[in-house]
Length: 307
Image 1 (cartoon, rainbow, N blue to C red):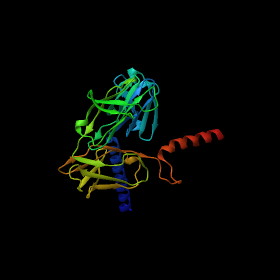
Image 2: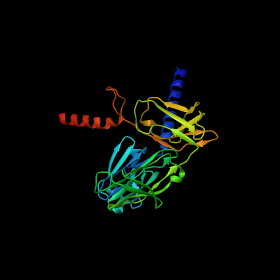
Image 3: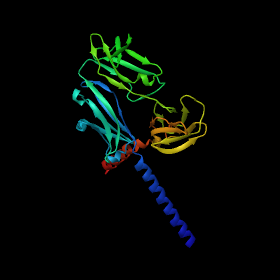
Image 4: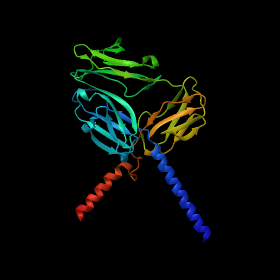
């Protein structure tokens, strides 16, 4: 009996330690980011910001230097907080970031709202050296693409009859301030194109992956793309080693969502790449975790109606 009681106490102690460890890890996962729908907008257009990876219970909000948070209408789903500004004005231009109730901050994004008739569509975040980048010049007054001139640091670099310009295999030399001009319509504001250089590159899904899918990550050196032993991290926490430079996450879930990076000994770390996990496994018997609050609400409402 004493041995049984001791085993029970030890089991409870281990469970408490595991719970504390999980709580500590979750508390330390403070890495999150802000995703704007656009960097440049025409006045009176809508913009929405998504805070990804933030703990919704920590009262995550979108902030700006002007504290224009009162204009936001918030929606919280799973590990995301979305802020929507329905009508933007020139004075809404500036830096925005996500901030948790504990004061933790995400990256910042710079939004420009123009009263003019031309804007430039460009990447929302830094691009990796070697990637292709497409810029688009758009007129507020026309739905069709018009001939546009593109400028980098105020120097004309391209004239496009389609309104699009693609920079193939970008390098650090392509980093700078970009704008465009449409004859008879005007000139866009400028946006900064940031190019990230790294000796180590993490190949991961660009688009959101479905819950239940398997995801393969590959870590490689930029100049010598042969396989190397690599360590992989999520939110800065070690999650595994790939002895051939690859690691597969089987049956991903929302807990796998977050900033990923990898490391190769002697070469360094890769830039972070965000893994987005969405939806449900394609099985009718499963329920999405983000559907449960809605189902619970409907159940309570139905019971209240019957009573």
